[in-house]
Image (cartoon, rainbow, N blue to C red; front, side):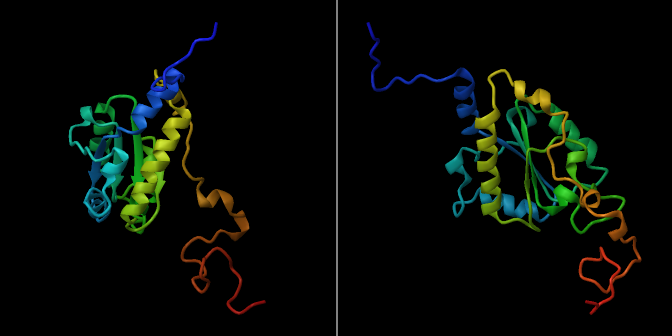
Length: 201
């Protein structure tokens, strides 16, 4: 005898249900230090309305948040604070690196500025730009929702793999060692990775 279900009943896996609930209730912990923070604030405004995706409840208490948005440059003095906030956030938690400065240090190639926050905390989604527009942050939230739905589990088994680096590979590892130029190298070329003379065919 077949069991007939009503129209308001559906069958799913518990992992999928937990991931569906989590992805639509992301509470951001804003860690805004520079101009990217202004774009982050604009994302919550009525023009862009991040509330459409369930991420409008920005809380400045780490224990109430599950996604940290690092927007702007991070200097070495800020790293212990950023790590402490990250450790105080309850699992499951995710991180969005917003802007070129948070992702790679941006134009601040100095000893004091962190050249990518993924050296200190795990990053799930990178947002390029200087500063990125609010639409890009919304796209990052949607990408994070897709990642949560695809890999999420009810008891957070997916975070056991956080020991592996998910970020972009460093450019220096992809270049041929003969093409690397150490400053003060050949500044006549646009990309400064070749010693060929300007105008040479």
